[in-house]
Amino acid sequence: MPRAVPRRVAAMALGCMDALPHAGAVITLLTLTGLNRTSLPHALELTLLKTAVVFAMIALYYAAGFV
Image (cartoon, rainbow, N blue to C red; front, top):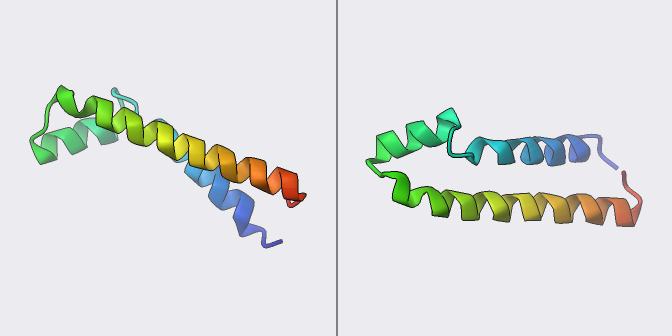
């Protein structure tokens, strides 16, 4: 197994925390796009989706015996 696979999964998992409402990236994105707090539920949906995909990838790697 390539050594980069667990590192990529870990990087994706760490990126899930960037979409919290108080994170600088979200505040900057909302400011640059001219959106307001009504778009936060959409950011939450994307965060949950990304977290679920990373969890599924980790579960798949563990089930296959790669990690």
